[in-house]
Structures are given as structure tokens and as C-alpha cells.
Image (cartoon, rainbow, N blue to C red; front, side, top):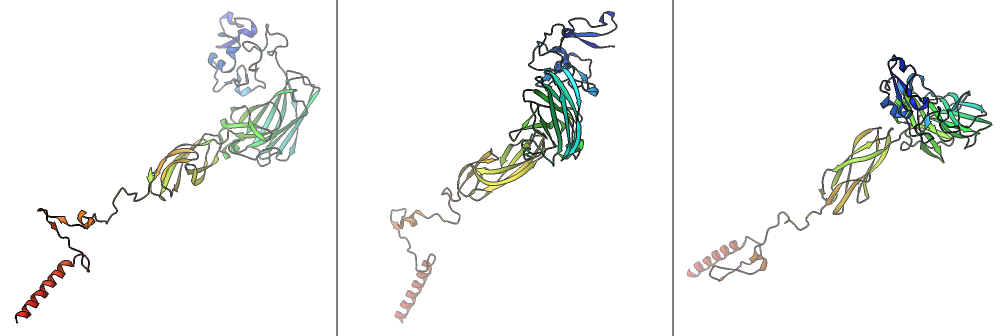
Length: 424
């Protein structure tokens, strides 16, 4: 043996068995150094990627155990917040009745029968005691094979004469009564359902652990990553996410404080507008403007979102967009505004810019084709010559502008003819 580890807290010894011979490499660690994520740092000789695993959740920790030989509960499992300074599970210094006493473990086989949407397992647990953990081997599957509930671990908080438990596993197409309507924003696409009942009192059961599997084919159909699988407990009609661990492959474990209807879903869709811009900042009334936005889904399942293009809160256009899980897509929405002014443009409530709508011919430019009048013509007065003598202004003729010179020539010609006639 090249490497081994010794719990100095539990054994009360600083040296490991066989270490004195010099043939065994023994490292002494305290209990707290050998549990949870701390063990991965302190026990470097163990391969935690391929061979070993350790429980480290918000509610419990354990010693390392072989991935190929999972145990329920895990070796040395300790509820976080319980007694003991460093989490030992017994030993010479553990007081009677403390939270660190070794748990009693019992296994009960359940009887199984086919029911609507899958299978139902029932079991009666005789005389469960406070602190006892009973594993009920359920081994029930939904009728489409998408979900299998392998077992339920029940931790009892008080002595009970007996406790009966019923567990049903159902397909996504056969939800039990009390299951909420599917909502991608809450639970994603349901993979299946679990329904549980018991005649034990609420105080009798501290916590239950569901050990279940989800078929690879079902994960692929719903485009779901195993890390995004979540078990939801339905409370007062609303799904509440539970602590759910991915154990590797298609195996999962979830913890619940009580029984009811459960939804096996995902982290749900989480869609938002992450950026956006306008194709113009100034337009004429009635001229279209286009907003281009990036929409991202950070959730574990595909979802739909209704996007509205709005100006100062007034809708201009809308579009429904479907975004795959953990993906981003680009969306364009166009609309126009008839009234001049300055507007804050938003898409899905996110500002994408400010738009100025301006009227044509607002007096700042001279309309094309309009001549600028001469000051003298505009006033109707003559323009003084260089010597100060006013220069007569030719009155417009009856034929309009341009005919004054023609009339003068004709008058001169008429006068010449009259003078010639008198001479004769």
C-alpha cells in the first residue's frame, strides 16, 4: 500500500495502523480535513475525477467513496449545522445522544404494480426509530422509460409505530393531479413526474432522498444537459426547486423535506435582451426605424419570449422569439412614429437608443425653386442711380414680364409711320 489516510479525530490516535512498520505511507488528518471538498484538497493521492467521489452540498458532507460502489447514505455522512466541532461520526469522545451518533440503516423492498403513466411502489416500514434511515427500493419507471426512481431514503425524526409509503413514477404526458401546467420559464420541459404519499406525520420524517435516473434519449429530445436537471416539489400549486445532484451519467439525487407531487424538469428558461442598437438616430415622421437586439437564454431549456419595440412606452411592433438553452440569437424589429419629437426606444424593456423625429421644412431652409426678390422690387420703389436721381421702375405690362420692350418698339414704329404720312 503506497498511500492511506487516517482519521485522527475519530480514532483518537495520531498514527495509523501499520505506520510504525514503515511499510505503509499513512497520512493523519482530522475528520473535517477528510470530508467534503476539503478532502479533495488534502487527499491528493485519490483520483476524484475517475475513481473517487465525495458528498459536498449545502446540507451534508461525507468521507470519500468509490464512484463504482455508491453507498446510501454516504460513508460518514454529516448534516451541516449538526453537533460536533469537526464533524466526526462517532469515536471515543462522542457523547450519547449527540447529533454525531452513527445512524441506523434499514432497507425495505417495495411491491410494484403498473398504474397510469408508469408504475407505483408501496412499502410498509415497521417500527422506524428516531435517527434511523430507511431505504425503500422502489425501482419504478414511467411508461415511456424516460424516468426511473431507483430508491427513496427516508430519515426519521421520531419513533413511529409504522409508516406506509407510496411512490408513483409517471411520464411527462401523464401528469398526476395537482401538477402545474408546464411552464418553460419555471421548470423547462418536464421530463417526468413523481407522486408520493405517506401516512407518517410531518414531524416523523426529517428528510427524504430521491435517487432517480433520466434516460439519455429523453435528455437529447429536450436538449437538456444533465447538469441542468432539477427536481421540483409542488407546494400550493407552485413548483419549488430542490437541491439536486448530478451523480454522473444519467443518475441524480434530490433532497426533499416533505411529500407531494414532484416535477423532474430543468433549470428553466432565463431569457433577456443583452444588447441592442438602432439603425438611425434621426428620421422623418412616418419613416421606419429598425432596432437590432441580441437575446440570450441562460436557462437549461428552450423558451419563448414576447419582444415589444416601444417608443416612450408606446408599442410600435412586437415579435415572439424562441431561444434554445444556453444560446444567443439576433432579432430585428421595425416601426415608425408619426409625431415629431425625441423618444426613448426600448425592446423588451431594455433601452436601445434615443430617436429624434423631425418635421420636413421647419423654416431652416429655403424651399427649392423659390427666387429671392430684389429689395427694390419687394418694396415697389425705384432704386436710386449713382447721382441720386431715382431710376424709374418699369411697371409690369399687361402681357406680363418681358413684353415692355416689344410694346416700346411697336410704339416707335407707329410714330414713324404717322410722321411719314403727314409729309405726304
